[in-house]
Image 1 (spheres, helix red, strand yellow):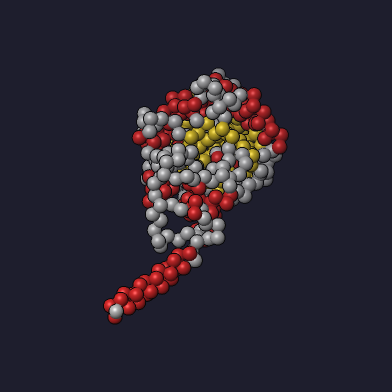
Image 2 (cartoon, one colour):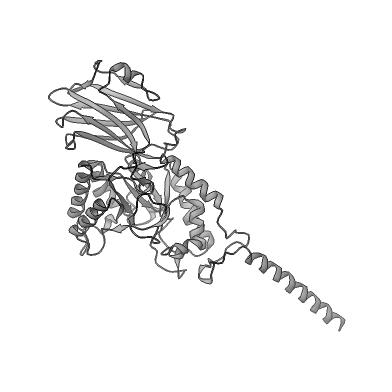
Length: 447
């Protein structure tokens, strides 16, 4: 009898301790937490609450890198996003983007080489595209459902670390459309703002300043204050017609709002989908609207900080019609003309023997490294061939464009991304034309 009493007493003590543990764990669970939010094998000590200081720091750092905001004046904004399909992107799309100097983003799984759509590409390809104006967002590790908390962390946190280990800045997280296998609601689905209060959404917000999913509509009001869950318009899949896409772009232009167009390269041209030819016509339309001054083409991360002000981060803004003495004193960027030395204007010979070099330094202090920019050059006419090159401080070529097809207003542009940790870049301008070419101004600005 005494032994039974001892066993019963031990049982009561165990129940009391268990009750305290459950009570303590429950105190960490937000009111919005419910059973469908459960991820298998969540560590007991994992804090289920968001850390507001950390999320505020991430957004502050990202905002500083964008120059606080990207003023587009009275224009609308379009951004281009490409999900997966690296093989097709390399063969059919990236050359067309560079031909038009259009910035864009790619949703990249860190194990892209293990999937059929990316097996023909390498990290060298990704780096090359990145330097040429393609910003990278994490898309998880393998585009599959995750079986437990550790795999969830690997998809959200580990994928970012893997991509950044290749000297690429990750701008944010894009929700992968995975087939349900382990979970009824992979990543919490993120179709409503409140879905971000669940474990996957909180982990995303603790890791990235920006993310895209389905929690908000596709039309972006400028300025936007929604940095997580923004949607997009998919134009590559299903029976989306060219005329419908153009109509959507025109509505954005009329309303002076923003819109992100998403493309699965591998679906272009498949039965029932948008053809590659019509997709290229969309790119031509965007280029024409940018040229006529009614539309800005920004990166998807840039779109999130766009407004209708005139404020814009510029690493260089130089009026080449000013006297040479004024050009020489331009700081902090050093002006160097190793061609003809003219007093009141800058003229490049058409045989390519003279060139203008413009150096921009202290980029890390300006938080410009890892970010997207466009170099713009205004000429006095639209005839002849202009070549723009961007090199890093070690002389490595980052991005280049050479074409005789200047925009109607005599402008030439080059989009590029400064590598992480790069503190100096050089813009080199040369001309090939029947007569010398006069340059009026040049600028390097955030996109």
